[in-house]
Image 1 (cartoon, rainbow, N blue to C red):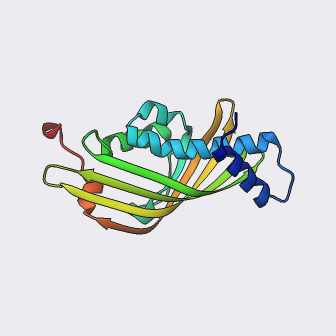
Image 2 (cartoon, one colour):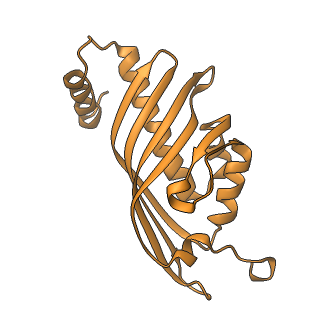
Length: 175
């Protein structure tokens, strides 16, 4: 059974594409959107094992507008491990994505979306909040096991709050 949300997505797809969409192209677009959204959901759930399933083995990442440095290609396991360290159990997070624009070319796809993230520490020296608004670009690759994220870039629009909340990682004595 198709719900109202799926029908509106199909109507939007029809309006925004000159070519006649196929059921496969509509299904691909919905699956790609799901994968991008689940990256946020699994981060907030701190479900690192499920999060890892959404990525190719290596990922081109560019968070330079947030943290400086250089864009890089890293192993997905290392990316997820870094998030697991930074988004530890006591750090409350909320990620949200919307306004997706998806372009599929064969087994590759490009996704633009608006993003918001919130981090909260309720106790300790770095207690407070930090939040960021930005635009994300994800590159997706179709694999035998489904669509996987192979590249992601964040372009920060605005951030506010205590930067220490974003970067704070407890040492072993605080865990």
